[in-house]
Image 1 (cartoon, rainbow, N blue to C red):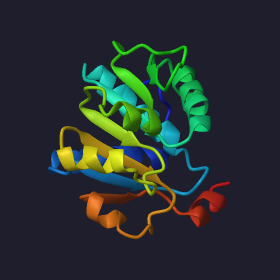
Image 2 (image 1 turned 120 degrees about the vertical axis):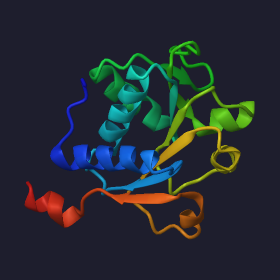
Image 3 (image 1 turned 30 degrees about the vertical axis):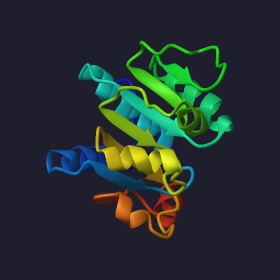
Image 4 (image 1 turned 45 degrees about the vertical axis):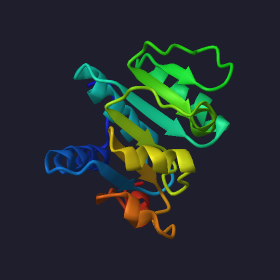
Length: 170
């Protein structure tokens, strides 16, 4: 694996895989800001690619497109970007980085086996329709798990690490 995970990220990665093996299809991964949720999501994307499947990483702000794309590039994860007029439009790639607003406007998702929702505490109508369809495994990433009604959308919750533990670890 090219994505180098910290021990707490690797433990969360393993817990997510175990939840899937146990039948969960909608997993919420909770970790504080700065704990490396995007890196963890990158490792999940890499695993999907290694299994010759397709995945999407869905962000809710355009500023996160470039930031996440840079992270994917750092780990050698070739990917397309689904965002209006983006120069990295490449729908044939098995890994796609998507703007939820673009997916909403287009009314369709790329064909994927796994969808990763960044900022999963902000579920748009398009996210909810995708969750309801049950066509893929969904991993939500959030630092804010206490959003009203969030629990009804996910089967499993993985608490990665606390802010206090991050500070103690330096």
